[in-house]
Length: 296
Image 1 (cartoon, one colour):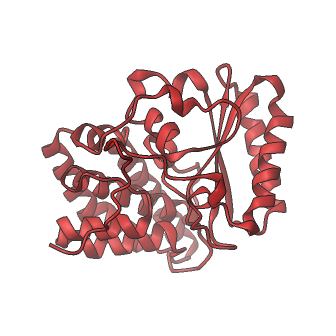
Image 2 (tube, rainbow, N blue to C red; image 1 turned 180 degrees about the horizontal axis):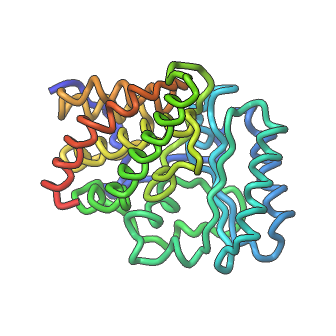
């Protein structure tokens, strides 16, 4: 077995600890974080319950001009279509004024939905472990702690089969468009390296899909699924792509090469349609078989 990280991401009680902290935000990203919080409060007013960050910025591992700003907003009520349009406007405004990041993505949910015990391993894990509070009452305190065990592995990926199916469909759409225009699915640089989101956060691609988003979503989803399947054997948690790759390679050496390719697509800006479709074939099928054996 290969070398495993010493830090398994657990607190002194053996529970998965929260990944980020505002004290870890690098100075070059602090003004954008402040603008994000101020703009969100101005946009939603008294309906806004709390504001969070997740991903590389609150973990202190963001790369200037490459990383995402990944945000989570919770409302005191169910979001409406108009609310989601407001979020899209926020994303565009912050993206246009924030050259520190290559992409801004903001999730919007009702507080009640993410603290629901029925969603403990998906939305609950997201808000308790992956999200760092920026403003307002911390909804993560209402969620019971998680252990890095089989139950977490089964639940943390949400509807992962549906996510893979949607990605395959988007890949086919892109391939058809490429064939009709004579374009190729080659490589270009400029994707993002934001953090983990679980469940539906990265499962689907916008319609019509674009190559950058498709490759990013494909790489991240495959990495996270593979890591989830070995998580019970390691007994730890991380959303850092380098750590996920290291852990997966240690327990499943045969997955090391496709994991490396998935990391390149998901976090290093590689845009290669043929590679993404190849991974959604053999590697995804192997992960599906493994997940079924785990009861996921």
